[in-house]
Image 1 (cartoon, rainbow, N blue to C red):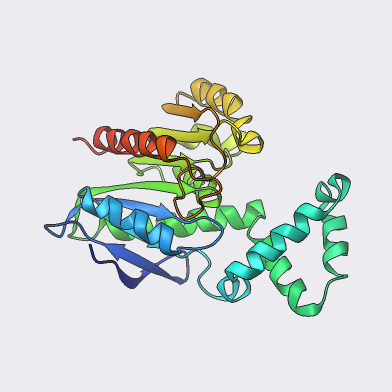
Image 2 (image 1 turned 30 degrees about the horizontal axis):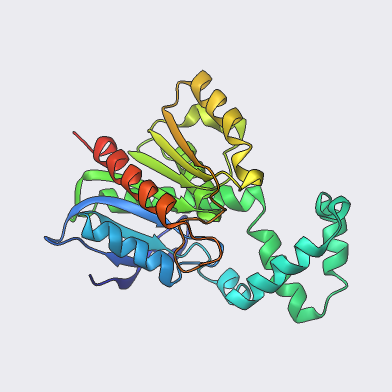
Length: 266
């Protein structure tokens, strides 16, 4: 299965992406939203898996441009290591974090500021608007059957997939893999079915899901979720053996395919 680089229109900018077409050249489209490491080999492999199942799979690089230059995989790993080393009272205070970053060497400061930027809720909203533009683009392509577009995101991308569902009223389906839940006030804007998949040991994320489900129910949003006991954050990522859970990943993949079959049905 071939995957090819391309560019697609975001909100006021062009975004680098990888496109995988199914056998036959057309099908419903899935936007595959990357982790904080960008559209790496794992994300591209996931896009190819969707193409093998009959979907047009597009993996955009939300970090296209300045952010991409700052956030190399090494910089991300080092940056998270630094941020997690800070005492809890500093981690909870953005101003104190900024002061600690200012103490680091200049090149390290740039990467850390890039990392802080992509964790800013305002930037997340901008990424969701980018993807809404990408979805509009896909709906107008001949190779997208019926103009149907869904999303799936992992970790950082899982949260953006949720925000896209809040942003694009024409989205057909949204999948969240262990991503942050959307702001409470945006949940009533969701118009498509949502599937959430979470690791039981990923308490920072998973412990917020029951409240998300209650808010979705009150808003009339069709949310289905499943928690895998014993599974870690990023349990679907088979390029990270320290957290990969083969049984949970296989079950989750089956659930996603069944969910899309329903969400993309006439």
